[in-house]
Length: 152
Image (tube, rainbow, N blue to C red; front, side, top):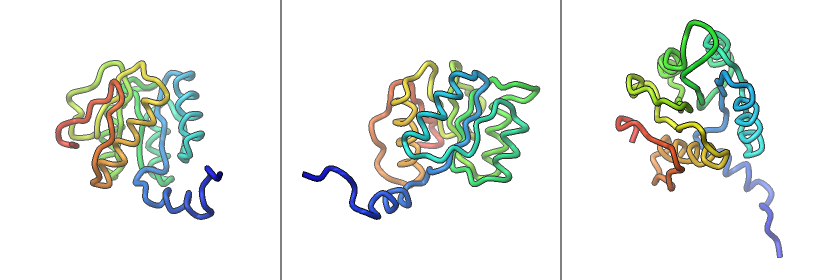
């Protein structure tokens, strides 16, 4: 029996994804490390993992980023909401990961994943966003994921 992928199949599947490169913006080091590890193990390219607005803006401007996963609270003067506003202006999708989903940022982000969340829930949330961006049927939502009405 063969349970692996046929050569070239993985690359073809990756090309069909809307989200391949992710920027992790998180002020809690352990959460940031866990997110980065889970994303890399799942085959995503992590463009960077940063904890403040200025670094995130630099990455968005200099790297190819398909999705920003951002906490609302960041180090420095600016917040994840400010970052979502910037990313949306650049056409980059945003998923908030936070304990308190910001209702004033509905037009800047696709949705919010409530903390605390399991690694599988983060990956499932990205799968939902990927399907949304590609106009496909949405898979089952993980616990804690809320899409903003404008995105759905």
